Length: 380
Image (cartoon, rainbow, N blue to C red):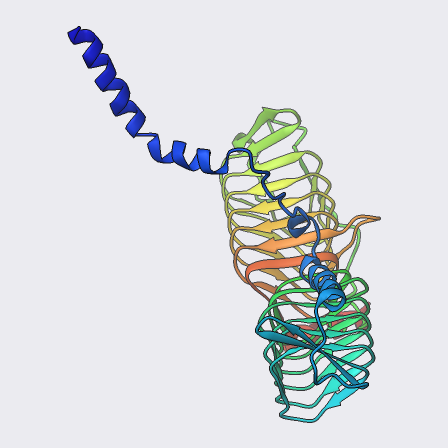
């Protein structure tokens, strides 16, 4: 009898640990859970597409307000209202507190303020230093110099983010994004993302280096040379190799197998990386190199001028895409992401996504470098 009472007490004590969870389960038992909207992670332009869909539904189901006219339709949406008008042009300093839908072209002067979302079905030009909540445009979109967007912008055609303009979240386009000096965004996605000066004359360099370091090195007994020490190389199997320590090459490298570096990695100009590279530290790729594999770095990533990449760049620190960098791949987009700041110099083109956990910023190429590039082009 004592054992039975002890067992009953033990079971009651055990149940108390799960009683709250059991009560919660009984409350939701039999209910159908709402499905997750996976488009949020699968679609880069999710915010713009979602807003367009919701807006179309609101305009079909919401009642019209009594103050609607032939030129301005007004819909009541709880504590908010939706204004629908044809083409419009706002003067400088105009403030708009309601959701605005423009069925034609739209432009506004400088220092305007839009507290709610703006939808434009034609072309759109936003004036300097204007403040916006979010913006969806079915035509071309020009965000003026110094404008601030608190959330996202999405355009079907060409999107230009003006100098010193800031987009706090995603900037997306189904055509192209031009990112001018001083502009900032959390992420950029389009079939073509580019900075100013993309058609400038590029630096002329040699294309036939006299010495090339082959990795993995075919001779395991070779002496250390060109910054490479064969004694630090280990096979991990599956055609993957580990280099124990920093690897700073002084001659162009031809990387032919997946490579892991326990430290920093750098290679000079005209290198060829055909396989994936992972470094525990920073990665620096020399000018006019070709990167066909993916690069993952625990620290910073720097691509020097005129480097070409066609995969994924992922930096645990900052990233710098120097002048003339190209991110291109046949039929598929490329991606460049950094936990720190991503800096894009002049004449950078990326077909796909550039994103940061902090910010992506465009800068002008340093004058000293441009002068040196012009001189090299003339000598070439």
